[in-house]
Image (cartoon, rainbow, N blue to C red; front, side, top):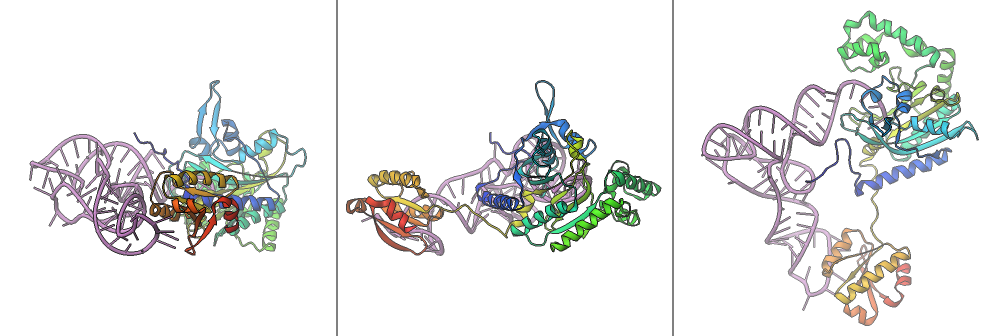
Length: 417
RNA sequence: GUGGGUGUAGCUCAGCUGGUAGAGCACUGGGUUGUGGCCCCAGAUGCCGCGGGUUCGAGUCCCGUCACUCACCCCA
């Protein structure tokens, strides 16, 4: 029986891994620049951590989590997102003791049991950044700036930043009531999905693609008209800082996020080349979450980058392949083959990347292999070379061959590379 | 969970109205008894997703099933 990966899970193959490294190292460099430190929480957490933070009624918690039960009957869940774990770690390890302001990032796999499609997998990867302990608009701008800077640094063209404010716990509920009653008055005009949404998550109606719903929602109250003075002030300061940094954005008062913990600023960075899953980065402020999970009343804001989505956007823009060896050693005849094996491994110890043919093959086949693996130079050794003590070095690009002293191979190779 | 599309060689795919399989790329060997990329020649590789049905005969038609994929929902 031949096995294959289960639905929604996939192998990241050697030819792709170069781009993954490129993205990860670029992210690490930029995070360092902005003062973010790496944290690596475990992949498995108590189920309640996610249901409490993401929200019991969200799609993620109600139907998408990989949950199992341990021997004592406790629920454990493969993380569907990273924020809850990072918040847990911030609280559990009292990271706020040194300084309430903590800037953290983490990179790794997430798990959600959804139907896979373009840009969506059951195991997928996110790069997360979270900024704790500051509730002011400068930290919003700082974080959004970092996200945009990362995208442009990595070579992405034309990302679009969408911005909205969801209000705080004080003004948010007022708007929900207002919107619910608006929807209730004309409930029959909406599609079946929206009729359900009107009850469970009224803000979602703004996102509906059905034309009649779009028309009906046109005159609906806008959240930006309902947020309180503090939230309004926060939102407009943020816009000022973004303008100051030259970051273009568009206000989208329909932008809503499907996780319950968001407050005030929420944002999404989109691309039109991703099909239906057009968000490459999503994030927002979650001022109540640290307290909700048993920590101090510290505000926070964060974002998540969809790694697979970003990499598909970078196809054709970046192509980082792991490079070939510095040297390929080709031996002709059994005496030479033994020496090739020895030299190959000795040279590797001194930091030179060397490749060879394990079996016995003709020179033509070995040259072909040297070419295929991308060797920069080939050392050719046969009986004649062993007798004279002079090997042949062929430069594969320039097609020039020179002699090297086999007794002083290491120095000679280092000189040539 | 619901809908559409697609399953033929390692990969990308062709196969007309039914007559038990083909191309390109890749791979191996040779042309060069010790020199890669280009060219030429040769070779290996398929339960045509799986099961059933119709038929003298099914990759092709019908039914079922599974997988992949795109979309809805929702999200990164």
